[in-house]
Image (tube, rainbow, N blue to C red; front, side):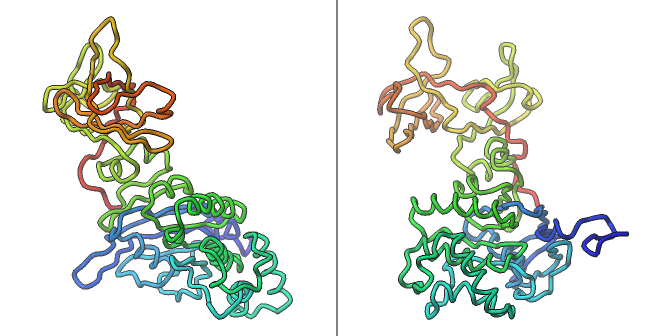
Length: 378
């Protein structure tokens, strides 16, 4: 006999309360298609990020999941239940807004108590839950302060605690770290990620910050022009992008166009100028056109070898110190510009502007972009 918490299909509802599924959802405003038919599947307990530039449709998609926007077509399921036309307050979803939306006339404790009061929870239970939430975000000593008396980071913690105090199965975050300065934002990325893991709450965050997406996510949905360009784990997207948009948006990259020829025992990418670059097999069929990418940190710079001419040489156009690395822009002999970011620059030889260097990388670092055309719909 199946439990009431189990579907006929055998799915355990108790463990799947946070599963989110978006089925062919689209959104039109008049003649403008803000989100093209898009499908997403997010497992219960995952931290998923919708990553894309301004105007890409990521926030509109998040608002449809929250219930703040009505889809033009498609369906949205939370915990395997269709909530497409369910009001936001009835979806049992936590939401952290970009501007936090804290009640200025309430204390920190009052802000946290509000969603529980709206649910009719007894006062004794509310006080206990508020105390636990304050301790969770390390703000117990600030319970009687008002939002105007808090720093940006403290306000962010209050907003986060208020969104999860009623233990929703899903937490939605709309650019909620964007207002913080760089150092505090980096600290909060780790704090939010640790809290999410502790609570095991499904989290869907919207951001245009690539580093934030890489640091916090289990899975990233890269979105542009209202469509999902690629889905995957952070490392997979970074090292194996499927099109030029993903390669250029998720971190910095050198994108090279050419065709594949067989060199001396190994395939090579031949640029329009005739420059030949080694690429690890298997790449693409010999004789076919190809778009390849190499990350700046994979490009090594060294003095010319004394016993033989360098295979590749470049002249430094610009060298910029960035703290943990340098940004070195090189002009190759055919005029191609490459960006190199040597790690630990102060502890190694680096050419200065106007100087030349041998340029090298492991052939496996030159990655074939398998879909150089426009992104596909999910």
